[in-house]
Length: 617
Image (cartoon, rainbow, N blue to C red; front, top):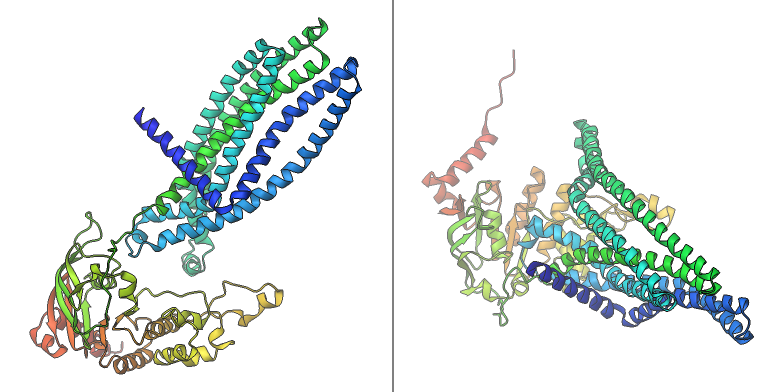
């Protein structure tokens, strides 16, 4: 019972939140829609009574022509109203949908901005919820409001006709109400079963969607054709569709049998009421208008109750989806941001990792184990280690995408947890190993590195020159204003077929562009380069590292690369192994110790110095 009460309270809270969102988006539109819905629900009852009085007056003109005129005018008015109301309601519904969609999208993504770290975005469960929230947030509140008013309208219609039946024949009214009870329970049960079925088939539908995307993906097209795997994935897609179809077919069959039985019951009740009304009219107990009213009322009550149950279940389903939206919007920030934070001042002395321990969750092993080292101002520190040693994790902690589980990271002695993350990140420039390729113009791609001055073309060009990508961008059809994507097309056929409408860069060129984005932050205190040349050819890599060597003179920088020759000239090399700092020193110092660094460097050097294989006889 407690669980049931808790679910009811949650449903009421969700309904209130959904209606509150719609109210905020367009209160006058909501009031207008509610008024029209209730008016639309009352019109059938009014029409039935006006028809009754018109027929009674025609059969027995004793009341006079004034009654007939009033009834006729009333029927004309209700006819006009019933023809206009759906159009007005449709407009208000569409406008409310637009307003609610805009407001819900703003609130959802504003909530996502509160997640200053990465933990939520690397959690697949949360990503599923975020996806459902995007689907539900834009449409569900409006549908909930529509359902709530629809329920109110159905109640008005049903109660109006039950009241009419009571005035004519209380016994008949009781019979009709009792006859609708099986339909209520049956429809409610069917709706619950269909909701459960939708949840059961959702994994199959998601897998089907995945295979659909895979079969039409540009990224997968090469491998699927090379390996001949298209047919394999097409069959897997069809298998998932058949699974969902089987469940849907079973549910449709159950609905067909149940609703056929209900239709027979409804017809039997309606037929019995009609026979009773005809015999009563023959005996003079009912007028012709009463008979017409009874026939309309019985059908309206039965149909109205079925619609009421259906609207209640649809509203319940929408509220279930809306829960995902509320869960995201109400989520607490993933990293604590203190109310009074310290300013991230320009770096004066050093950045210190002090006994830092970190793991991604209690179920995961430790990624970093007691890491301690310093990055002195103006110093270039190279970070070395095998895959999985913790290098990229260390960068995430330094940018405060996560907080250490134990220990601290200090900027001139101030714990990063005491700083506003946005303030800290304004002092850092980064090229991530998994850099982004934005479907924007070349200038916009670079300008994202410093949105305080997004239109400073001179700085954008200088950053591109330092990254060695200026000549390529300047030679594009529209220079720096060329779209670096073929995703967006123009409105006319000429624009769609224009090859200059969008250009796709190579992987190495995109990497240079990402580097330019980081170099745009030339006034920042710390430059982090995580594999900045992994996608470049040997000549381009040499040019980039020569540029970076001159650029980082006197600048504080953290360098990460698997190509050890690219960072051997760093002031200090810090070697990570299994999440621990196992060595530190210059290249010359570490080569003399014969440790992990010396082994890795020697192995790489040997691959370049290996003798040519002898020719086969």
